[in-house]
Image 1 (tube, one colour):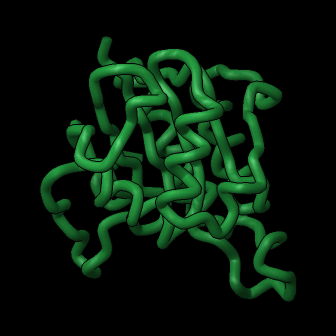
Image 2 (cartoon, rainbow, N blue to C red):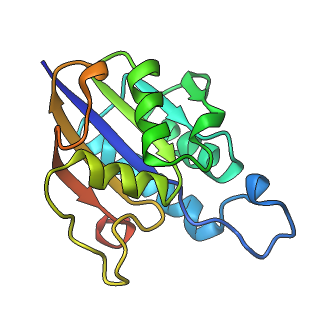
Length: 169
């Protein structure tokens, strides 16, 4: 059975506010980008069965804005502290142990998300104009055969990679 993993890097955060990293909110541009990604997911009929998010404010706000566009109650978001500042191996463990359903949306941070993406697919990923694989609010859609416990290095195929600059407003 084919499963899908949607990797979403949190949208642009506001560095102008004097807060610790964990509590930093989204910038206006980030709020708009998160809404765009949610709308794109809705238009593509890519409603996730489960949403796993870092509990950091900017990631959780991103997940909540996506949920609004998909008509998913925000209480459906599962926050997992392991996602915050996680490396690829930790994120893989979260997915293998905390997932059910066919399609999962994981909202988190770089460099962990980007490293996970590069580990899961057996080929390179096109970089953005600024040389990044997953800039803020980028979404990678991956597909793989088997169940979540079988997700492993090189086992997934990149189906789509969208970035805020190529999603219509």
